Image (cartoon, rainbow, N blue to C red; front, side, top):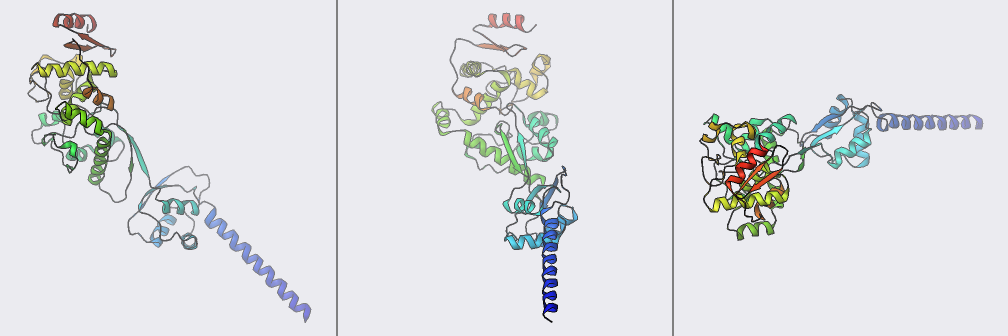
Length: 359
């Protein structure tokens, strides 16, 4: 009888041990072993706002990102993360195990797209870039920031008026019928990929992010100096955009800015080729005589003063050069094909330089 009881106890112990090992193996296999170890592919996984844990688990299993929704639910309940999963679009992989996926979903480590706006890009350049990166299409972007003037010249039904809320103080001097050209600060940004967000919503969010960045870059010292000169931010940005397109090198930009401000003060036409290339999309050396007759407030050959608005989105050095410009005896400049700037005091010197460098 005693031996029988011992035998039962041993069998029970072996059974419990087997059960424990089986459970541990199941947990290891279902929870800690990825569904596809070593897989390199990544999957965009959207978690909608208000989605239940069961719904998330079911989709994860359907997408073969986890092996078992039951073990996923059990793990999140056991770890106390069942109520901390955040909405967003996540980059997941079948090579991740359940703890790694749960950690990602609960930390809000959502997919972010890194974008880089280059100094001197126009609205059209930026629109093409966003469309290529599949953030939103060109038309959606233009409806928010306003169409470039060249578009409006070809189609009078299009509007240059920006549709975003103008709740930034630096925009108060920008004419309403002028786009946000010049105000989208060139920099590297990270854009959150939000599930269920429309292209228009995303475009507005990105534009406001860029405007906020410009607001921060324009320090109180810079604003104070602009005010001291009795100019406004729109004028400075417009001048900076000319420098960005025409001149390389900070010191050369300062001298060129001094020349252009001096021309304005003496009621001389600016005659900046870059304003025509902005309208025609041709290079400076490809400009035609008829281009100088284009009827646009951006044509600095036909109209005196600054163009109506910026012709690109200038970088910080061009903005600084427009503010902290340098006085010189020069009245003319030209840029050689290799990017060198030649300054001249007289028209005769300028013509001679053009013959020498722009053959």
